[in-house]
Image 1 (cartoon, one colour):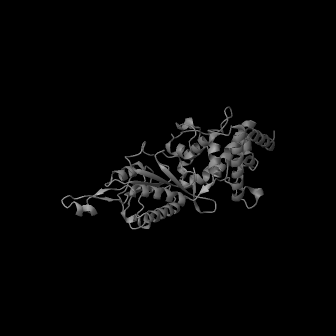
Image 2 (tube, rainbow, N blue to C red):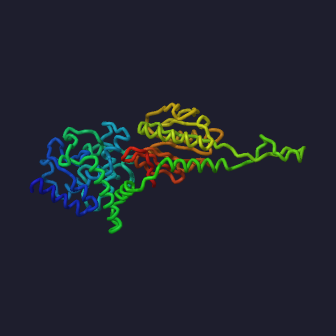
Length: 400
C-alpha cells in the first residue's frame, strides 16, 4: 500500500474512533522526510514521517500517531513548555510527561504510539496534567521519543519554515478556530454519547468556559476578607469608654475594630511570568489601599525553593524579587503564618506548580492568586483567582 493510501486509511480510522477530533485530523499535512527517524510534528499541523520506517506499521498505529500529534497541538504543549522555560536537557522528560497526559485518553485496546510513556512508566496515577507528570514523575532511562516541536517548541532539523499560506500548514488564526471546533465537538459528543475522555473534556471546558475579569474576582475576594476581619470588633483599653464619667472608679474598655494583618507569599521561581506577576501585584497594592491597608504595612515573603526574609515596602514596584530556582512554597507559607502578629489574610501569588500543605495552617484565611494559563488544581481550603492572558493580550481570569 502506498504511503498516501496508508495515511488516508489511518485518518479515516482515527476519525471513526475519535469523531470529535475530526476537524483537527483532517487539517494535518504529512511531509515525507527520512531525517525525522520515525514520526514527529511541528506547531503548524505538519507531520513529518519516515516512509521507510512507517512502511510496515498497521493502519491503527498510524492512526494513533495522528491522534497523538493532534493532542500535542490542541493542548498547547509547545507553549506550556516555553512557559516553564524547558531546557534541551529536559526535553525527553517533558515529552514523556505530555505523552502520558495524552495516552491517558486513548481508548482501551488501541495501541500506544511507538516508545511513548504512560502514567505507569512515570510511577504516578492517571488523569494528571503533563506538568504534574514532569515535576513529580520518575525518569525513564530508555525508549526516548522526540515527538517534534509540536510537543516542546524546540525547532528540529526537519521543520519547515512557518507557513505563509494555508496550503503550507495551519496558521495561528486557523489553529484557534480548529481548537474551538474540536472543543465544541467534544462537548457535543459527551452529551450525545457520554464517552468523551476525561482529559479532553477538561481541556474543552477550560477552552470554552466563559471568561470573567480576574480583577473583579480578586477584588471581591480581598474586600470580603478585609471586611470580615475589620468588622470583627473587640474590647480595648487603649481609649477609655465614653461612659467612664458615670463610673469614675472603674476603667471601662471601648469597642474597637482592628486593621487586618496581611502577608503575601510571592513565588519567584523561574517559571513565573514577570508581566502577569507585575500586574497582579499592582492590583493587590491598589485593592489593599482601598480597604484601608497600606502596602508598607504588609509583609511580603519571596520564595522559590527557599524563603526570603519579610519585606515591607511602600509599593509593589519596590519589592526585591529574590529567587529564580525551583518551587516549594511550603517554606514561604510556613514563614508567613509563624510571624507575629499572625496574619489574618495570606495571599499566595504563584503559577500553582508547587506542593501545598495538606491542611489549612492555623486559622488564617488564604487566597491563591494563580498566574498563567490552566494552572493545576489547588487544595479545597484555598480560595483561588486565576490571572491569565486571553487571545487579545488582556489579562483575564478563567472561571472554574
